[in-house]
Image (cartoon, rainbow, N blue to C red; front, side):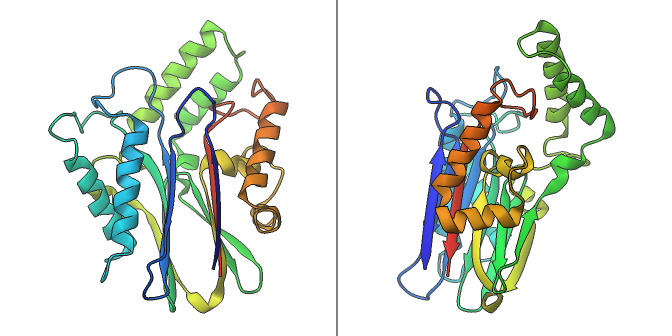
Length: 281
């Protein structure tokens, strides 16, 4: 089996809030991968003394350990237990009910000789290539289906010049509207401190005999398709296979640099942490 990964922080002066890990136990012929994208909170209190990299390291470490443990439960159950373990690690010192408590998006894949199981929560993307070479995207698209008034606020922000007070005020209003929908009915879900969020994940299983390769992308890497439209998912997978995850990230950075103000391709962050992982059988 061949596994390749690449990751880059969005800005050199800030820590990378992505996490990726792959485990392949010596026995059993299976393995798993976990990809997390930490949610950068707005400036202001979070109720937690820990930062996002601390959170994703603890959540991701627990998730990968649980997923390859003997007689491991489903990936959703692994996520629920990993969220609970991470919450237990800081519930005595932090306000885990704060809306901005550290949290992350999740992609997980686990395989053995018979099946390939997957889980996706929030806006990172999983690509699955079948044995005929066709690529399908597994996405949790709830962020794409926010209520009309919220999407109208986003459009209003993007219509205003960057660096202006009017844009900053509109962006703050939009941010509050999105926060109100985080981990709420009618909104979208990320892994934070409530293990019940695992029930909201997009999950599924494929016969191992029908899967040739998988790839997982944080939204910072997926923007080559979703924001810049330089590739479709099939093309992105072909790029990963032929040139590797590092080349995909290089092209993302080139596209970001070519639109430094986000005017041609509006996006929340001009540059974002980006991580890609490719696993081929």
